[in-house]
Image 1 (cartoon, rainbow, N blue to C red):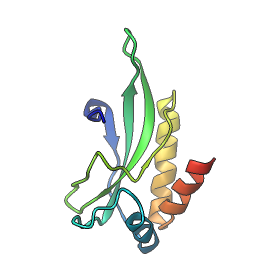
Image 2: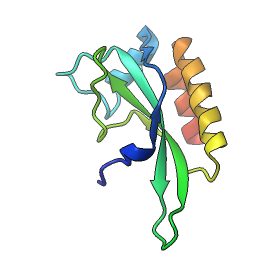
Image 3: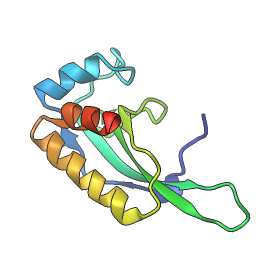
Image 4: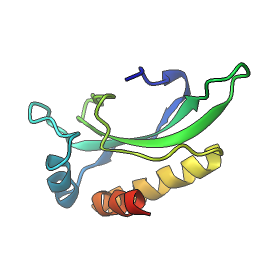
Length: 115
């Protein structure tokens, strides 16, 4: 797995994890029982395409995080497909942030995965 491109890594403020989303997180591969996850870190990440001219696509990633903003970049809870426009990724990140504030991130990302 490649190290994320932190130069083009735009995170929004941490959002507390609700009870329903915490239960879903505990059933996912992103869960680590040794970490006290309390928040979601939602980020738009640039994905550099393999070509001579520097060109990016964008994806949205959701990581469980601790109150101190620690997170494991190797185990995201959710990653979107790459998008050509950053505006699309920002809109999705905003939608996921709104869902997480309602304790519905797990159902929103589930619907996103099957669409």
